[in-house]
Each structure stands twice: as C-alpha cells, then as structure tokens.
Length: 174
Image (cartoon, rainbow, N blue to C red; front, side, top):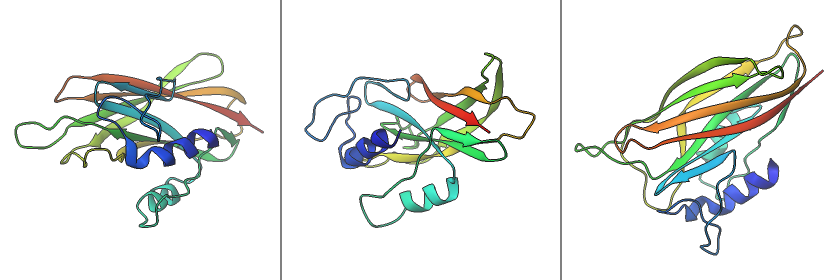
C-alpha cells in the first residue's frame, strides 16, 4: 500500500486527461484500487488518521508524505478516502460526483457503509488530483471477526454519467 502511495505522490502533478499516467507520461493500467474512464479517475486509499491525512494533503509543502494502511487492529478505526481527477462540470460549471461505500467481511457478508458527495464544486485544474469530500470510517470491536475485509466505493460523476468502482483490501488483526 505504501509503494502505491509513493506512486500517487509522484503522480500528483501528472494526473492525465485520459486516465492515470506515470511521471514519464505512460498510462498506468487500472487496478482494484485505482480506475479510470476517459478523463475521469478514482483511487481509494485507507488511513488510520483521516484528519492528519487531510491536513497533510492540504499542506503547502509538496510532495506531501501521506500515511496509508492496509491493516487495523480490533479496537481501532480506519478511514477510506477517495482521490480523483477529471470530473465533468454541468452548465453552471460545477461538478457533481457522489459515492457509496460497502464493507465486505471475511465471510463475504456485505453492508452499506455510507456515502455522499465526493465533489460538488468547480473542477480542479487540469493535471491535478483532488481529495474527495466523502469518506467512510469504520471501527472494529472485539465482537468483530479478524480476517480479510474489502472496502468498495462506487463513484458516479452525475454530469457525465460515468461510474467507477474501486476496492481496497483491509486486514483486521487482534
């Protein structure tokens, strides 16, 4: 997960208008946690401290050193955040991107885990990534099973009609 974040940081100034690209301009293939459709791209990241992640993201010192995780212990929480580029503005010049989160347990059971607006404002400058407004935070207590979980976000750009689903894997331990 941390190598993926390092790649993301390297891509901050290089988000493409046609999917994700690496620093040399070559396309990056879609993966479970990072997808694109034309100029619309979504990535899901997990962090143990959403507030610190957002503060670091918004700091003026590039590139930010963002902390992500793919494990959480019983008694702790984890947040899923969405990073995106390329939303389509409506006739008023405003994007309308929304998400729904689903948490899948080790036994395959699925539960809705919230959602809301990812972005409802003017599009960001070309070639820049935006941290979405929506997030999902889930806590695990001693009654929850340990094991492998999945967090899925289905993200829709309501103006363009494009829909992308991204998944992050999470290991819950004792």
